[in-house]
Picture 1 (cartoon, rainbow, N blue to C red):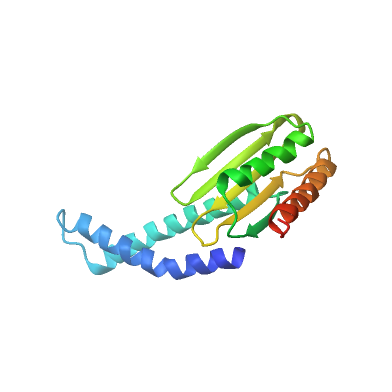
Picture 2 (cartoon, rainbow, N blue to C red):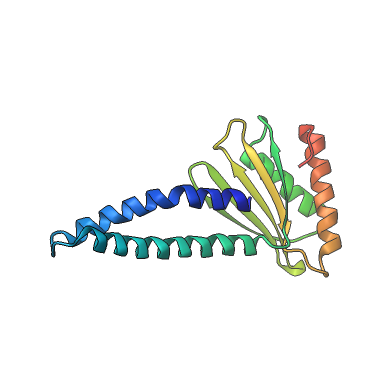
Length: 169
């Protein structure tokens, strides 16, 4: 995944520089007559700043995924509410109380089932961008205190999805 991120930044960097260059020129031209090298220098500095900001954000996302375990399922029978019902059922059977929060975009639902008492969360990432839909299920962050619980939940989730959909998550 890291290689994909680096490749995406490398491909988008020249495009970003061109966009920034024209933006700087459009802002500077009415005020004074900048030379092309001056605009290029400012555009390069702004682009490098944006790239550093982007790299920092990507590294933060990687750190937030530390000690998490993910599995994905790609099946035409998947539905968002059905997937959440399976996850809720698995947690309920094991006697966990959780707090649920969902972030939604047009094609993506990200639901966190936070089990505060045991210090972990179950994340259901449901994407309708692809056909058939993709569900990614994650557990974490794992630590010495909840390692066994998370291992049990991962295997129970895989078994349940294998029973319902024929493929383990």
